[in-house]
Image (cartoon, rainbow, N blue to C red; front, side, top):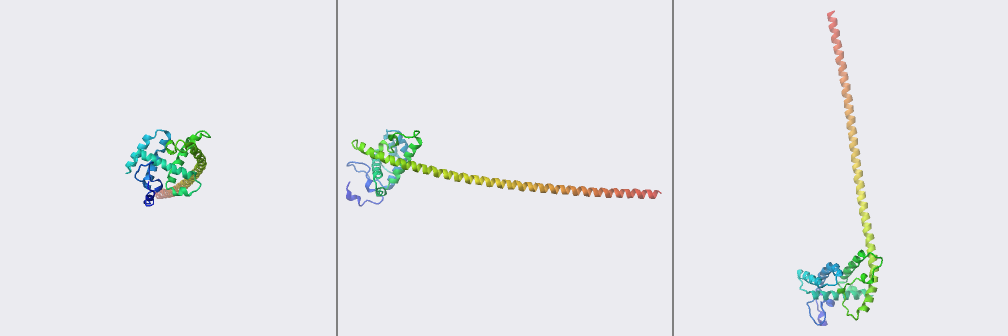
Length: 253
């Protein structure tokens, strides 16, 4: 590709990884948004990629999903693009200078894919220490080196993988502690809410009991007053009857 042309590419294009294929073929340049959409699709299918070595059908699926989003990319173009991105990502991982990571616009997208892959491996691993092949965060489709370069590159990848494993385990434990803190906080808030509701319920029950006792006391007082009034009336009635009887007796005499 003409390097002089790369200096005039729009800012929406990543010049260093714009070409999706190798050799002398020319493909339409990948925009930043197209690459991010591609990585999003690839991330969704990453668990399936790790389960099988025959990934031709999966790349066809990615090609179809890209077409659904308005991008005309073949399966081979998508696969070549992925290999180029992974090669760039590996270079950033093995480099001591952080400037390379900052200059690579898709470093965080790829890192998220590989971190998620490592976490899946950690969650599914039942042994204390697995084989190096299983702890490698790259699949067969992630390698872009020739057969002669692979032994040397694998040593670098294993070293990088060990370093990444420690980082991922530390990050995983940190996330677990954070989740536990959030869970404890939510539990304490729920417990406090339950305690307040229970206290409020008890206060209402006590208020109702006091009101019931007051009503009962008033009823007793009214009943005593009624009985006293009835007794007074009975006494007056008896006195009146006795007076009439006395009057009748005196009249007869």
